[in-house]
Image (cartoon, rainbow, N blue to C red; front, side, top):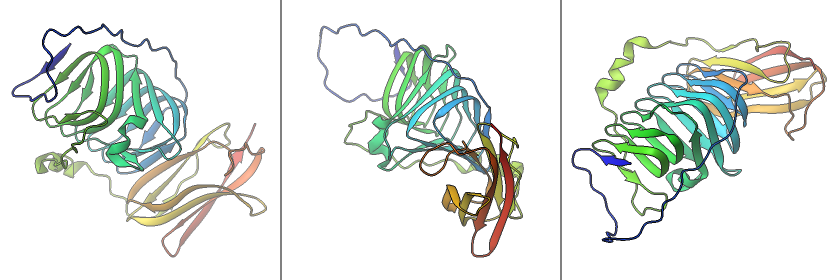
Length: 297
């Protein structure tokens, strides 16, 4: 079923009394489970492909995902969150078992290629409750929800395809297919929505590298750090001989709290041996801090 509210415009070719073959909805069958992960408010979280419990993206935080398959019990994005999808190594498939929730003013970003690579991202969910795309939210990709309604709220934006039990589209929603020659308009979020968050901000006032958790760990651990201002950051893992094992972050990061997961692999993707390792952060021109972590198999 498809419903267009208010004064929606549909463009294309109209063919009267055409014969349309019935296309069955896909049957999804996958599981998830694993550690819960959170991108902290105004911070970031980088996840490798794998299986997780609930993944929470808090207000004004950024979730970074890379090419591969993700399996999650839930994916919950708060207002003004951002999900950055790196497709340089191929497609990204996000498979959700229980609940896919995309709140107001959320932005899905695909890099490289931007909107033109919308076909390289797929959200698949087995949920029966409504998949609600919030107001002023920009979503790219394929959405597969054979048991659920997919609802696009006022002023949201979409480029891609939807395969669902029901699709509802409210007022002011540009809805483009992958190969549309048109571009989505520049997203403008009302100032009053921004003001709602003004009194609820956690202010980071110092550079800090936190102890990883869990520690000791096997097979993954989370390293958190905070920045009072945007800076060029390099976060690396070394062995006790001082040899570089893995570079986790290398580039400019925004102010706020950040988290990244290390899966005990080196830069070539090989599992490393049990033992003590050092993780070192360099931020800006002067700040350097290091801590120890223990991998125990």
